[in-house]
Every structure is written in C-alpha cells, then in structure tokens.
Image (tube, rainbow, N blue to C red; front, side, top):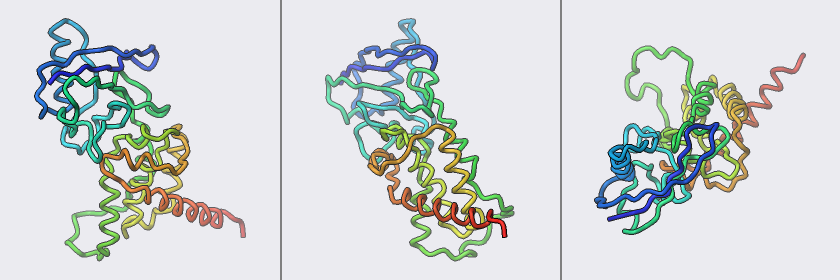
Length: 254
C-alpha cells in the first residue's frame, strides 16, 4: 500500500514549524505506524535529508513514549491502543495521513513530533509515591484488600503517562493523569497515611505546570490508550475537597 504523509516539522520550540509532505510507498499493511515512520526516515536518510524526529521506546504499548496526533486524534483512529500498536491496515491505500505533535503549553515541542513531557514527571515527584520503608517484599495476602478495590487500583495503575488525555482536552487539562496516579495509591491501605498530602501536592504541581482546568467533557478518557475511566476524576475531586477541609482544620489556631 502507498500513503501520503503530512508531517509537522519544527527544529525546536523557538522556531516556526510547518507541514511537509512525504510519500510512503510499498508498505506492508501489517507493519506498525512506527515501522512505517522508520521506512520513511530510511528514505529521507538515503536522500541526504534530515529524518523525522519522533519519540518511541518499548513499541509494546507499555511505556507511553510514542505520543503524537494522527489525523487529529491522540494515537490515531483506533480506540484503546497507543501509536506503536496502530497498524497500517487501519488506513486505506492512497490515504493522506496528517501527523502532528501533542500540543499543550505544558508540553513544549523539542523537535518535530517530540514534546517535552517532564511536567508529568514533576507531578509524579510531588506526591505519586509512598515514603514508608517497605523492606523486603511481603508475603502474598498479608494485607487483605477487597477484590473490587484491588481491581480499581489496577485500573488506575494502567496509566502509562503518555499525555493523550492532555492532547485530547481543549483546555489541555491533566486531570485524568493526576487522578489515575493519585487514585492508584489512595485506594490501597499502603497509600492512606499520605493520602491528603499526596492529593494537595499533585494538584498544586499540576496547576504550577500550566495545565488547564477540567470541564467534564471526558475527551481525555475517550482518547486514553488504556481506557482509564473518567470516574477517577470525580474521585480526585472528592479527595481534594476532603484534603483541603482537613488541612484547613489542622491549620486553624486553638
């Protein structure tokens, strides 16, 4: 199959970007989207042109690195998959495919399709962990956890931090990411002692990074390659209100 690509090229965040058009010919429909990009880059390199910069790592839908917009959608037209799990058979022979970087104030462009998503790392570092010394791995079932709670925590832990939720949101909100990372720990017994400080610090880090507000339209959940539920946003809001009230009571002089 043959396709035409409209790819955003930009040297860095300080320079002006533009779309460039490339032909991708004689493709195997069963190759992944990233493998197609590899073919295009090999042709560009052979021609003496600069290859397209795009982020990738595991290519198994685990790391969340391969983040870009394909035909206006984060990770492309398929639901519940990352870009690396999108295959060329998704498209038709002769299609024109537009490929762009994630666009958000908190995700500055590094080059071409590569964006700096260190803002997610800062949010995680603000409270997305448990400080207690855990020592050696405990015996299985030493801390009983109900299956419903365990399943919910596992659903939240599926977040790969790719940033598709931010890219899909018209306000570039990071609420789905923050709610998944906070909710994963707040649901479990090990996360309870630091629950309030975790929520307050992670939300503050999110605001400081420049992400927008959530307006409950849930484009984030629809675009998530791991299908994280928007219900985690509601839980984060409840946890935030509770943490704010308890923090205010503690701070009130006797």
